[in-house]
Image (cartoon, rainbow, N blue to C red):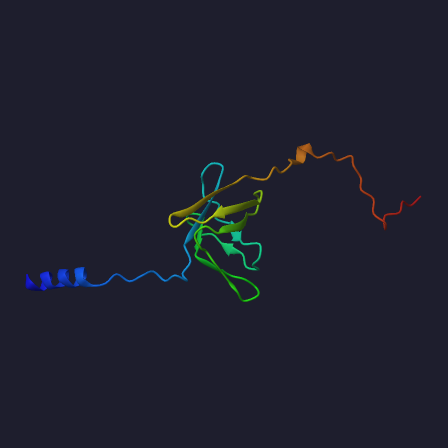
Length: 138
């Protein structure tokens, strides 16, 4: 019993550690389709960086608190700053988002719309496209 009391006393007396002021604030992006299903093939990219970040294949989410730019600098997510993201996936219309980062609970829901792909029945087969090397032989 004294041992438990001593542990409680240590926990109360221990000073709280301050958060690292240089640490970024986590931002979570959740990519879904219009039906609310996760788009597991989506990628998230910040326009200044070269890398594309794949979303989680289970729930369509991606999370980070810092990005590394091609010039070697870091883009740390800070409260009040605007985060620009491009979200794309095969078969879906790309999405562009500007998100202002809050102090906590940064969850950005993204809904991607499926591309309108013409059906083969809708294509006019009577159109002929000629190329330079196509010469009619008489």
